[in-house]
Length: 172
Image (cartoon, rainbow, N blue to C red; front, side, top):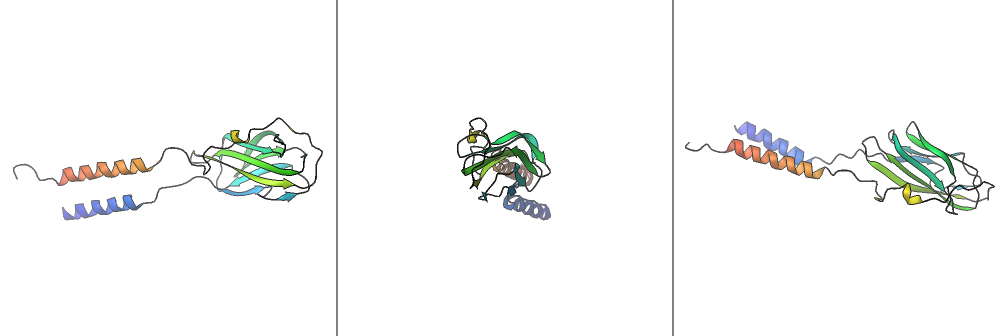
């Protein structure tokens, strides 16, 4: 009986001390690089991740200093990257690359990167953009159901079952 209690307590300690799993995708690179200064705009913009993002609901927009879209067409998943075509850029200034993808574990990942165009281009802008539409309102890309309530509930149920199993029978 003492061995059973020791095993149960050891397993409980391991469960309580185990760190929460976090398998969200993380950005590993971008084209153009965040903070880059470019004389001409890129043909494509891409954000690379440490794992293949889900193709469902992927968003990638390039917004110019004029507040207009400069990306063309729909984004696509290529390997571990989300990619969108970019038309010839126009005004000098800071361009924002806004992304939102669903990581392999189902959690949304979003954010923005910036680059600067230092020589004016002759491109034509697209429609006015809403950068917030492409990004999550949660800046750290969190979201989803938290794991801790399930861990606490499991420990409580386990503790109750252990107490029930170790109780002394009436009349003994």
